[in-house]
Length: 213
Image 1 (cartoon, rainbow, N blue to C red):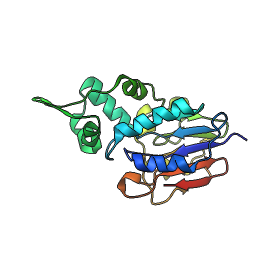
Image 2 (cartoon, rainbow, N blue to C red; image 1 turned 135 degrees about the vertical axis):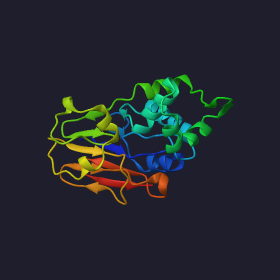
Image 3 (cartoon, rainbow, N blue to C red; image 1 turned 120 degrees about the vertical axis):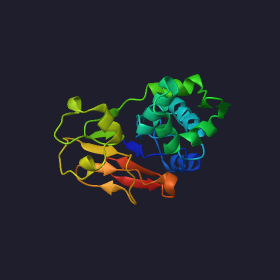
């Protein structure tokens, strides 16, 4: 049976990411490895995390990397100069340092490797299988997937995970850190605050086996 391994928010915690991958017995040809976004910001080695994930994408056949709100903040800052205080105050400064921050008179600057920029720009907002839907933050109840606002897919919190709505598929998400994985009939939350001193969580589906590092 095809297995899916879904990993929660990493936020520059390369050591925990490497520890997590070492725990997973992934079939390189048949299993799917899904990351729900937020690879960068706040933690010590955002660049190292992206380098490591790019290596995984070369080594494994089925690696799906979703877009998180922190990747969106980085792209807005890097490509358009938008929301610099929002980016920097939400862990962006640590990301700048990991990429080798260069000082300019008008403020901090960043030069991303082309492979990293392409990685960030091509991250999808969601991924579906027959029984599961993977997204960074969640869905707005009462709307079909086609009707969802992309901003909600990256940023929504309580309106989603406090709802009893049935989204037709089990929604697996990150973004909102919980002390332990949130497991209900309709939703699975796998951000357990790795960058805040918690664990990095992975869930194996469909069996719902939890791994933590």
